[in-house]
Length: 176
Image 1 (cartoon, one colour):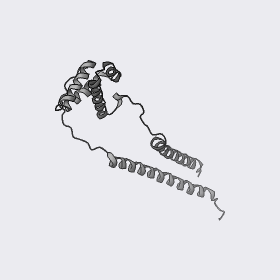
Image 2 (tube, helix red, strand yellow; image 1 turned 135 degrees about the vertical axis):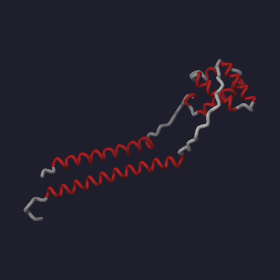
Image 3 (cartoon, helix red, strand yellow; image 1 turned 90 degrees about the vertical axis):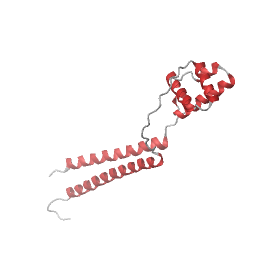
Image 4 (cartoon, helix red, strand yellow; image 1 turned 180 degrees about the vertical axis):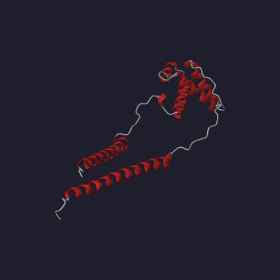
């Protein structure tokens, strides 16, 4: 029986498996350790919603102190108007009890000419727990298990390959 094609296929399969494991490990090392993604010089409209609100509040405070319409327009120059209107509406809804800040928000809304539509009351949705540390540990555990399974598969393929290679070395009729 000719095992040369069989062992060549097994060897190629093992090499592909080792390559994929190396690719996965390399991807994780490059993405998490060597060159992680970091934001630098992000625009205000690219921030998370809570930071967008803080930026708008700070701009409203600055406009209330200086009344400089040009600097206000410069601060909100690239901001999409629909997004700005929704942030202003959310802030207006949150700050119903705080009259001074609500007046400042109205002042920048009028100065920029933004039309704020009242936000409808949100329908309650079931809240999902944020992953936090537990979610991160769970993802890490899944990755470790996947790597272990791939390692076991590659190890089994190599041991089978070695057994087949030993069988080919033995020639019939000649004792070892």
